[in-house]
Image (tube, rainbow, N blue to C red; front, side, top):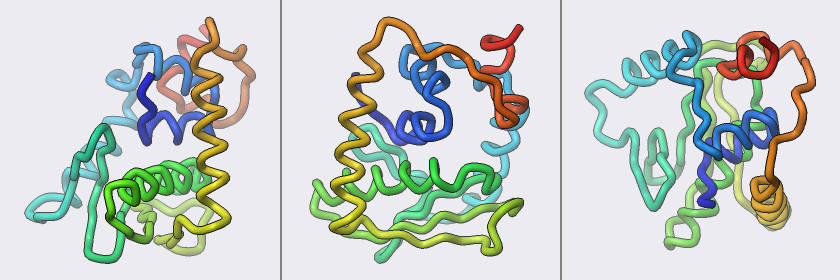
Length: 164
C-alpha cells in the first residue's frame, strides 16, 4: 500500500482514521470542516504559481527555493501536520531536492505563532523512517483499532462511522 502525506498525518492524529482512509473508506467529502479547509486553501492559492505541486504520490501545498509549505485551516493537530511535512521533505530529499518545512495555519487556536518551521535532520529522519515502518505494519492488519472516543472525534469526518 502506498503511503501518502495524508496517511502519515492521520496515523499521528488517529490510527483508526488512518486505516479507514488507507482502505478507501473516505467520508471526507461529506465533512463541512474538510470542505471549508479546501475552500480556504483554494482562496489562498489563487493567482499564485508555486502552489499544489504533485511529485510521485505526494501533493505539496506550496514549494519555494527554501521551503515546502503545508497550509492548514487550523492548528488543531500540529504534531500530525509536522510529520506529514517531514514526510514530504523526505520524499523530496530522495529526489535531490533539499528544503526546509514551514507549516502555515489560517486559524490559530493553540499556537502562538501562525507559522512553524521544521527540518528533516539527523534526529527526525530516523524517527520518520521508523514511523513509516510502523504505518506499513499497521495498514496490513485486517481491521482498524477500535474507536476510542476523544474530544477531537466530535468534528471528525468519520464520527458517524465510528459512533453511530
